[in-house]
Image 1 (tube, one colour):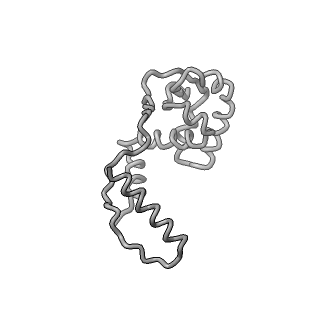
Image 2 (tube, helix red, strand yellow; image 1 turned 180 degrees about the vertical axis):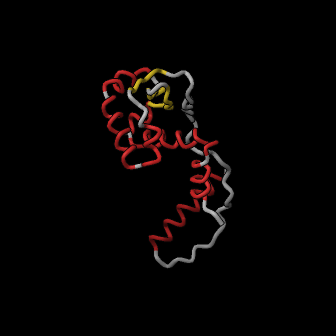
Image 3 (cartoon, one colour; image 1 turned 120 degrees about the vertical axis):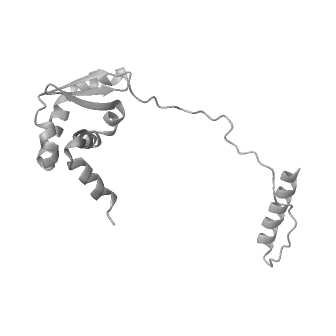
Length: 151
């Protein structure tokens, strides 16, 4: 029985799925970037020898334009360590970034009711068979709290 990574490597080596291999190289580039840049970049693509990066927010554009040299050096390092990505990144001469409107918006869900409200299922009818007085007091307190929540 084949493992999932063997199947994926077979698919990536197939010429029909050349774009899958390209996107796996883009993913390697994205994961090698610092976390703040990973959140900023929505996607990559290569066109006419230029690596384009779609940004999720306009605030990141100036910072990433300032750090183009970092990305170019990462491209060369990935190409030396991963021979499969060498063919993808060897044609890249320039790096450009733009603000993309085609990215997934992160949905921030604010839950105002953080305390769970539920009906108490226990009746509080149990025997306390403990000889230690401190533990007996704790169990009595639990029994009283259950009876209060029952209402």
